[in-house]
Length: 315
Image (cartoon, rainbow, N blue to C red; front, side, top):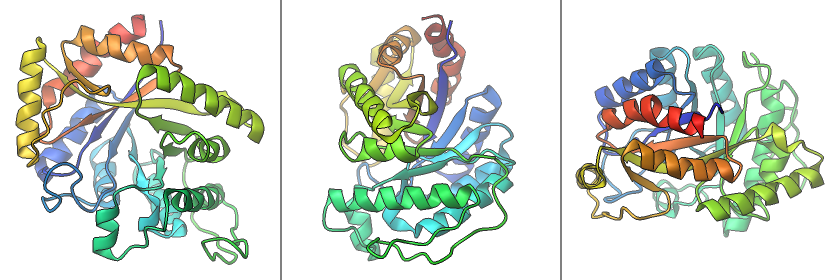
């Protein structure tokens, strides 16, 4: 028997607020371990200008509407905000939620929303990953109660920065998302408590081993980092029925996306979804975050933890 940890990501585009808050309450009531939302300022599926909610505001509202589930962004777009402001927001969320905050961090990839808002997107992925590493170190120090002063050649310019009050948690977990094997996984090894990535099982296993190598180089215990995979899921008794639900969701998201055979799309009965997740377990991943598009599929939320999790736990 295992205790496979399951989380839900409620995509904030094309969603109404009443549906978003009620789905969060349901996730909390059913006993999921963690609850996430995107950190995007424009929609990333279909029409970019369809409605979408801002991430930290959503988390603050969820913190008052839920009681036990951990809360985070999957994942926070580092260029959007000064890392000091991020650390202050996370610490505040930790107090509002009574110690349930997770600091979700990522380098960001959606250039459109940065250009539209006049946010510096950098000149390359490599530059944004360097910013992420620097930001992650600063956020870790601030959340732990330390003081940050930037190096002269750093991207940021912190000067004797410290924050009060400290978070309620002795160590607020940092989640870093991404699968880059040279830079991203090095940053994960240095700073993260959780890591999230989406990839086929063989790639998950390879990246997991590479992360262990980075941990050895950084003097970090690999067991200190929880590996979480990412996938989409629709649970129905037949695959055809699940695909009809997915197609309707994509239509609501103003998207022509109908692909249901991708490596991260798990559509069908509970046994199929459990089989796919067990491949992730075999690759070294003890947790998953299942992403759900609006309108939120309450049947899938119920059946994932009620039917799929027991199958995964039994192996």
